[in-house]
Image (tube, rainbow, N blue to C red):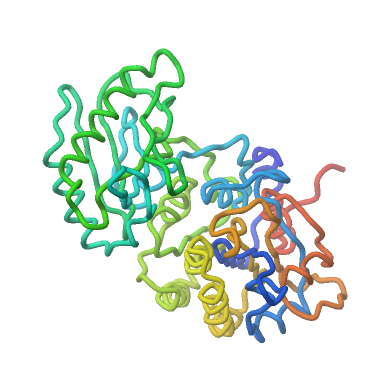
Amino acid sequence: MDLNIIKQLSQQSNSKILLCVLDGLGGLPALKGRTELEDASTPNLDNLARNSDLGLSVPVEHGITPGSGPGHLALFGYDPLLYQIGRGALEATGIEFELQDNDLAARGNFCTVDDDGNIIDRRAGRIPTETCSVLTKKIESAINIEGYKVFIKPVKEHRFVLVIRGDSLSDQISESDPQMTGVPPKVVLPLIDDAVNTAELVNSVIMQALAVINNEGQANSLTLRGWSFKPTMPHFADTWGIRAAAIAAYPMYRGLASIVGMDVLNTGLTIDDEIETLEKNWQDYDFFFLHYKKTDTYGEDGNFSAKKSAIEYYDKLVPKLTALKPDVLIFTGDHSSPAVMAGHSWHPVPLMLSSPYIRKNNHSGFSEKDCSKGNIGTIYAKNLMTLSFAHAGRLKKYGA
């Protein structure tokens, strides 16, 4: 949907919308023939589903596996093929690093390589954030690139941000992250002629960084991806005419919400902390984005039982969300992260929308099977906001 048309159609209302994103929610059947969501005990979500509209959402396009950035942009109503934000800019903004217009940013992973230089753990055992902070400080102080300033800042666990500041930089370079094990990190290559200098500069940064960490036990190497500059996006709150807030413990999602124009609220590290923040700020905003990371973490780790347990834990907190009595309550994910694939996938994502304006249904609960038969059908995630705002009475009639 054209966001300029949305701006024309938006109207004021006292209604409140709560968008709950269980990152990587969708799954695939495991040994029992059930997905993580289907196998989990979720009495609260199931009960809510019986009086809600269900469906499936496609984050980008059928068959396209989305990253977290495009997946969330789509949920916020942005066409992810039209509006693109690199992972580097997201991570930098998420830790409140003030990107300048000529800053080139990348998301970094510490990883573990064997004696042959091949990656054996893409996440370096998810080292503690404190260890990441020590390593990034050492690397930043050791790097020297004439004419450029290099920043390396910790994000969370094994993740960090690399920012290069200087003239004539290009984001048209390849990534060093092969996103698989058993192979070495890649050499960064220019994708266009004007990016040759940037690629050489980045490879020099990598070599200087490796000289600092190559004797570390777990974090003895690194990978880089998501090269990007500071983006310019249509403002979410202005477009939809609403006071919007984001609550997320993880920096990247805080960064994404900030870039699109939501107020990012300070919160703790757990979903319990996030819900407490939601309760404290409920009267101050009309739209809330509430993020939950654990479902994606365990899906990417290939840990079916842990992802199932993370869903069950979340379900126990659902009564706190319904007690706030939002006019529109949504549960979905930004993409699927089936534990059997140990990563993101292209599979449509379960979606539940609760409001006073729901048609009668026969849903037995909240699961991929129920959602595949739901009233909403299979929609593109970018259409979720228009559907939500319609249910909230916040969109005027289009045309005469």
